[in-house]
Image (cartoon, rainbow, N blue to C red; front, side):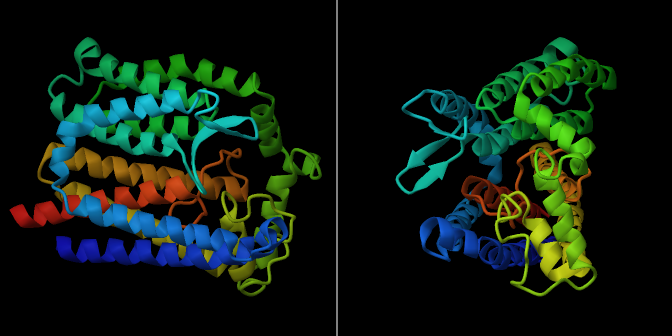
Length: 365
């Protein structure tokens, strides 16, 4: 049974990656030609990141995933160090007011993407070890909240609120599944909500995103430009789409067409049928991933699988929601499809972990 689930997840991810390759080229070709003189600039880079992701996936699958529980704390400490270093001028690279990247020659590395995976591994190990004490405020709940708060504070400082909220949501899900008291989770959510609200209100571009979300058509040439162009792209596609490569919105109308808003281009060129196919594949991944989690024999594998499914699922829902105007713009890519080096690599490594969990359970059963 697990072998069939692994095969289906592998085919789903390969299908999503192939869709991404096609539409990254379609949505970025003209923009790349204008910016770099090379129509295939972003496609070439994406294929390079994809190759690195494949190596990472094969590497993680060759290990016994249970050894990661021993390395959870050291990996998290390394991640915290990187999150601090990226904020230091001269070490981290600043782009458009954000200091989120290390520049490594022609490549860039985003430590917040690593933080999503290492925090997930740490949280899965923590909940597995503390499952008999997780209902205790002092011994179970507060220690991991301290660690989560430290990671999130460093990522917010970059600033990157989207990944901060995603990491927090995944850890909350693991605590809920692990049996933490609802009053602890609810109380902390009530306490954190004003902080999140302040982070939105006090930062002009975040507030502009909220205003654009509430009524993008009020200022379609200003703060609502990105969302209105996304909706125009999706609406123009109709049922069947305008045809592959024939998008008008990618012609400098829709910003970030090959990254955060790639679904809009898919919708314009392939219509409702194309976007429905993408949503179906993501739903199938979540379903099959949940089946692996349900069959996991050890607690660490179970919580790790739940966290991976939650991470990919939440990121997909948020990206799709932003594209259709259901959520404010968050800056989170569509897993396996959007252009983005660090995100693609670590999402593929996460899938490798999921397949590894399934493989280990096959061996033991």
